[in-house]
Length: 142
Image (cartoon, rainbow, N blue to C red; front, side):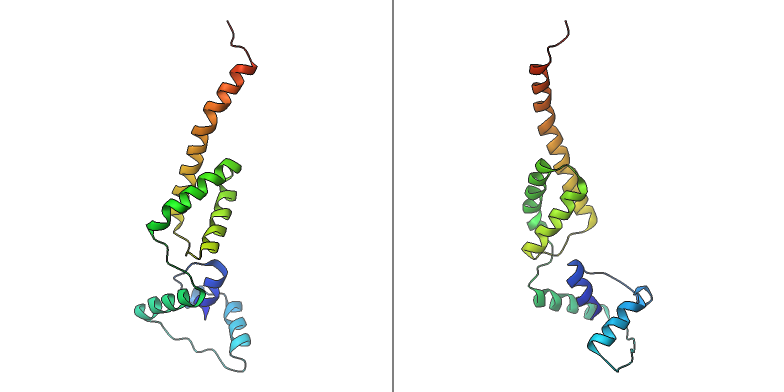
């Protein structure tokens, strides 16, 4: 239940221990889905964890991230950087794109690399143009 709830909220999977889960989350699930029952924790085997992930993806119609999606995300980040060079803006919009495409979020490093490259490309694109514009407005000193 926790995996489903966390996936529904964040569209990604987490490795966690029972001790890491806020008590309020467990209490909410027990009240909402298992009223009158007491919580009895059980450990989950590694294979069962991965099986749960596959089932959750099927349930919500999502696909795991793969490098095949990288060109689409890179193109999106490049377009976004032309609108706004704020990394937080680009990140939020990429996450919205991934949700729309129903793709599990890639890792932090992947998103960081995509956003960094999009910002660098925008800097390269914008700087020569601004330099040319300034030279036409302001004559060079002699």
